[in-house]
Image (tube, rainbow, N blue to C red; front, side, top):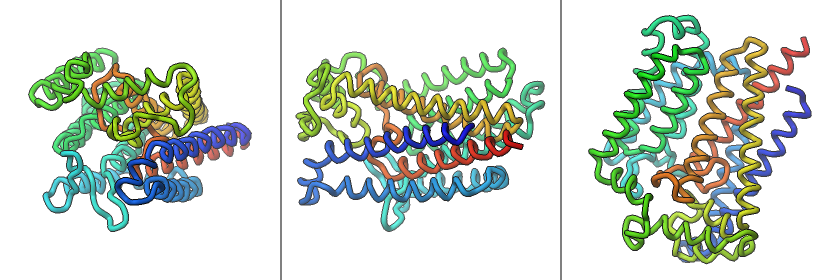
Length: 370
């Protein structure tokens, strides 16, 4: 990938990051003022998260990709250990009924965000090392699925159904790209569909989420309240929006306005035009990451290629789920909009992933120049 293209991707990425910072400020000022007595608490913290993320991204950019290959297994097991630790009462922090966070003194860190990165790096390493086995033997196909099953079990105990879905999709699509036999893949998809349906049905809150989004107006002051307020925001935004800072729904009507439902505030303030511009910017970044992966594959660095493909899948699916939840076409999930929503763990890990992507682009360029 040429240096000019890498600068283009960096420009798109920074634009998205600072746009997210602007929208977090707009969406959180009122609630911040009520909770902390001044309007910029969440903006200040998000700015610190962004600085930390950019620092980690630069560090990752300076580290050779071979380093991540070497630590893929230790990083996976360290992340699994943290997933176990977070489930221990008194250690894991409970927020909104889910035990997903570890208190680190300054911030609460969501372990599942690190798990997504660790799982991606491990899977990329496995697929590169067992390229023939995964295509020809059932054992090669099943080994990463066992790892995925363990991760999914720990995530569902938190519970974190949204992250489980994102990681499962990332694993399956990457394995399909690696050349898994279609018949095995179809059987696995059917089995996964049955399991996901079973999990949704046997857990009352998941079943409620699955049914509420179909007609939230039937429970607009109960389980459908958050979605109906989000839909009102989209309706008020119209084509051009109400203007930056002029959202009404963020005035304590829409819960989680600066986190999971920030896209609704964007639609209300910037309208259809602003929403489509954001989606186009996000899609452009995903396409650039996919091109970096394709370039790495052309130069026979499949480990780097799988990381790039997996990162694109991860960010694209999580972004689509968040937007889909906001507009009411998907059940409510506790997933942030990458690079946009308020949240330290998500921001830091997403920036770290992008630092690795830039390093892949740089190393591929070096290889092309030889």
